[in-house]
Image (cartoon, rainbow, N blue to C red; front, side, top):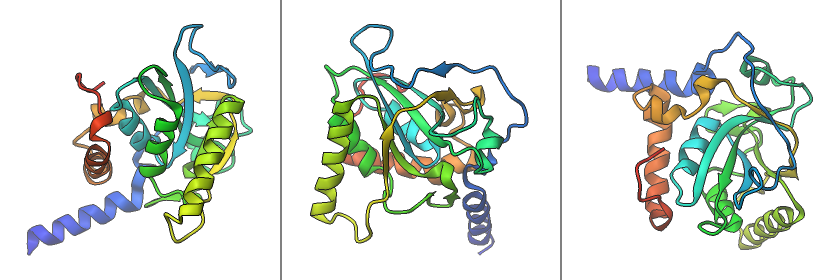
Length: 224
């Protein structure tokens, strides 16, 4: 009985705080990415930008896809230049927590990335994913070109027609804007902090479901 009570209490604390366990009072020097950078450094790689709640979760999911070169956590869609995490969490900057995904289109398509996006979060909850509440946790696709916009809108329309969810999809689909890298301790967070309560109770179960649904798309080499 004591063990059960302890687990319940611990779970309540984790879900109440959610991503708010992140703590940052200082401003760091961070790279600002060009919002219209369709390809990475002139090579064959392309970029996608998604927000689906806490970027720790989004980063952990997309890092494990075959064809994904790198995933960077950051902020986009707001009105404040170079915001800190604390400023974004205030809800006053307009930014969403997002992942900037560099991928090889010869190995994974944008449509496949969209499939993972739609199936690894709830796109019907406005400004919320689970216990993480606020505009920074909104469901959003920031497209980098007209083709990405077309594909995102088509995929959304298909899901709406198939009535996958009882509630309407509230995912924002907007042109990409400046992307600000999140503080260093947010990068590669799950891989560096798997024993942290939020990772244990929220991200690990999400990854287990993800692996079952997308077993054929998981990278075969070591995790990033």
